[in-house]
Amino acid sequence: MQRLRFKKGAVQEAVRINNYLRAARLSTLLVTPLKTVLPASGVTAAPASSGAKASSKEKKPLTVYFKVTLEPYKSERVIANGLHAHRKVQLTKTADSRRHRAVLAGRAMGAIGRADMQRYMDAMRDEGVAPATMKLEQAMWRGLFNYAFSKWAWASLIDNPATQLEMPVVENERKRTMSHAEQSLLDAALLDCRNLLVAPVLTLLRETAMRASEPLEHACWRDVNWERRVLCLSDAKAGKRDVPLSPVAIEVLRNLGPGEPNEPIVKITYDALKKGMERACERAGIKNLHLQDIRRTAATRLALKTGNLFLVKALTGHKTDKMAARYMQVGADDVVNVLHAPQEATPVATVAEVEPPKSAVPTPVENEPASPPMFTLEQMQAMAQLAAQAAVAGLNTGKSTPPGPVQIPLLTLVPPPAPGPSREGPSLSLVA
Image (tube, rainbow, N blue to C red; front, side, top):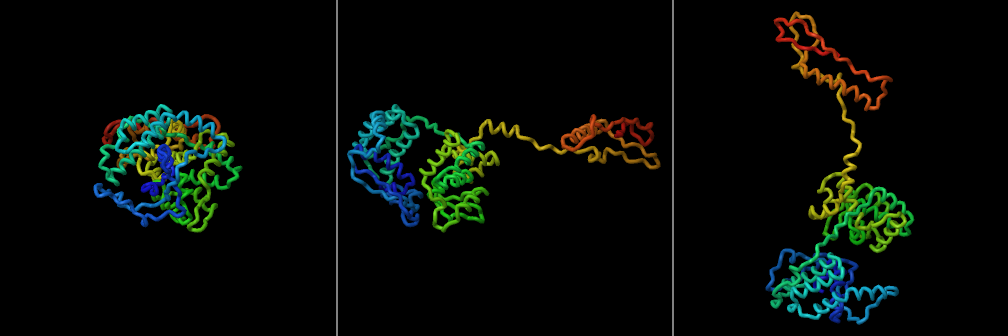
């Protein structure tokens, strides 16, 4: 209750904590989002105990997002109609892990050892629990013991039993992106959506790579900077950041508003947006496309367009290159498209545009009759190659050409006059 009100993921963490409180038959947590989030300057972090060293992060003021209260323990949970059979199967499948959870819930923290925690994690693994879910469970326990060390200074706690456990490797990286063909099908299917906000919100997410929570929960009209063409979010999952707006994103915002400065940009819930997209994908015949894949699609397209990781980070708001790279799903097909893309024709110089180097033109001798210019054999070969390229380039440019074979200028080697006193030796001249 001291910590949850400051955490953006308090609702999900309260669900995990309540599993232990119910096992111990204790009052459960009730987390209620605040209609008006208290400013950071109004609340400070809980003071550290005398035996703990306060870090610079703990000294920073914290923002209150939720109101956390306790509600009495209920022996029977309310289960919606139609879910009783599913609930029965679930209880049978998780019986072993629930037994270990009940042991941990009824034991003093100082009496919990690493072996107890490892047996609990092994039971979850045997039941087929996802590795990412097990990591969240471990993180909750690790945070609890760390808080008891740093804030409450419990001397009876010698070690953190939630560390150094044998855990499965989390391999949940998703690579799904939306193709341009799927985008066209989805846009057509969204026209039949009853909720008129689903289509513009999905377009906004596709153009800005925002998380779904950012426009739904944090963005107001006062945050739109029309001159800079950015959306200045005062708060998000990773904190304050500026979201670049593409021309399409600006057009979407203009069609939606603008509204009052403190009015949300879009008034739609996450569940409504998710359900609207799922139904549109069903109508369009698109499979396995999630809402988070829209963000990955935007990052991948910018990466293919610019090849600049720094621009992708600025678009997605990631702090590290590693996290940004997870959203840039460039595969072999993308490389093939680049390799086989139409190449622009390289301009070829014609013979008339080629001027021989001044050093190659001999200096005329006084009172000597004019003679063809003299070139070395290498220079003549180079000029002959340019003449052939110029003739072929005439065909590639698309200009009309006379019928019949291509006429390439004739190259004639003319013997020079007999060497005289002003000549150093025999040479050849080129006549086109």
